[in-house]
Image (tube, rainbow, N blue to C red; front, side):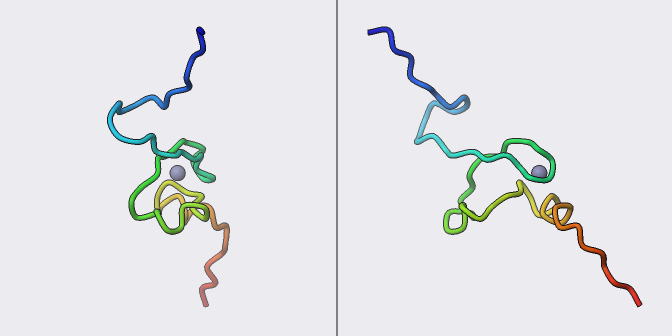
Length: 61
Ligand SMILES: [Zn+2]
């Protein structure tokens, strides 16, 4: 049995955390505690990227 287990690179301790690719900067980011309830909806690694993601013009009058 020479089967290799896929391991998440990083800390050896604890359960492996899920990762996603940021839709704004294209970098992988790791699960965070603050996203535990909305991880499925998270698409950006940070609030900054979230701001970049929404290409919405601020209507200034
Ligand atoms: Zn990002």
